[in-house]
Image 1: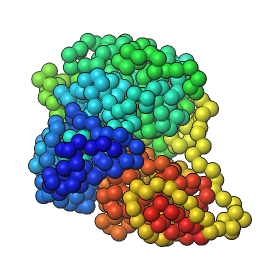
Image 2: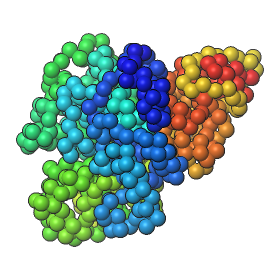
Image 3: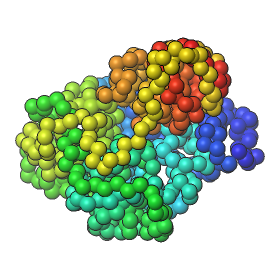
Image 4: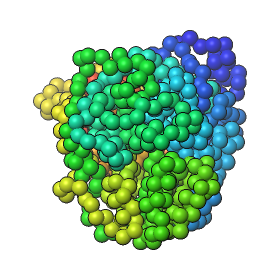
Length: 583
Ligand code: F3S
């Protein structure tokens, strides 16, 4: 990889310890993806802000970097924190949590990162231009930046975004490159998709089906949009942006999808229609009903504790719809509309906050249901119009879920009960019917017992983090998401339905195809390491940034490009650099 003199100076430690550690992360990612150079970035959006996800270990990590002199070189903003920084008492957040959360924000501010605390920085003035390179980490914001604005960013992990802010650089790979912005799947939508929650369900379904790639949607009736939402506040375009915000968040929650195109609508699809070429797989969506039904959790829900709107954080237009639906009402359930602070200020000036709060709801800034300490607050069930929140609420916040339109959610807030369960009894999202007939096999079933009796076996891979260790293998045929998927305090896999559910990763040679899920997962691996519960080594088919950066900062040896179909749980495995010996 070619480095400029300034980049080499950072890597050699001439610009201080923090710049050196940050440059090591950026360069490691470049090496993993065979990048030829680093790119200057115009802005950075940093995830890993809620104290609930960072824990004490993550907070110490940030303090260490700040002490070593870490300072942002480019404009950088923060993802949501664990509470509304002004009104945390009204949310029911404890004093202890609040103090820790304030500490997190102070240390980020010390590093020069603006404590905007939103997953929609583009609604608060951080609007990258078409073609500009940025380093954003919240997956829904990444999807919006790439797809709706036509900017270019990979989905950075929490620490890798921070590294990009400190160095002002990211490696030139993935969605920064023209060739990776081409469509990989054509999605023909043949059923009506009109209401925002239907766009969310469509995103969730397509993400689950393709798992990773760049979908090209055909058949969605939306107004064409240009790249700048601030300078073009026109109604149909604002509606298009709002529904695409929900759809992109869902796509990125069920699959590793950081970019999509909508034919004739999104800016890159309009500028470059040949991004969708003949011969790519076509998926046909005939119905969203099974997906909508599957987004309810299975357990019976007697009453709705909380209705949550604003995942991603709500726009002014969405706040207006909520206010119109609640004018003069009296709520039986709690209701949160989660927003960026600047959007709440605008809504306050327009009288919208007053209408919602007169009805008994809260317009909550700086946080969201997924990152706030919901169990500490005491909620057990949630109704939402966001497919991303529906998918995350149980594993990340321990909440039972009802999913539906904004109107159904507002009725639930008024009555305290959910009325319109679509379809049959709700299945777990993992059981969504595969109506489109494309479910890629991830890996083979592993060797039979006779084959394994013929071991020892020697495999080779590529070193991501150098190390020499041995231990017993724990093999997952499915991707692993660390945040919400592995408990950092016990080391147990807690993702519902994951093949390793209930097993501990501590001290094992953890084998899985690739990482998935929240970009804050790197800090979960770091927390596991600090608690002595990390895997002894990680072996992947393909390293992705979240796990790679987590392994790097936690000091866990990691190897990828390994044929893991030969490995099975219980084998004794020796990892010696790039060589893996199994007995
Ligand atoms: Fe934003 Fe929280 Fe949803 S970060 S996208 S509101 S899960």
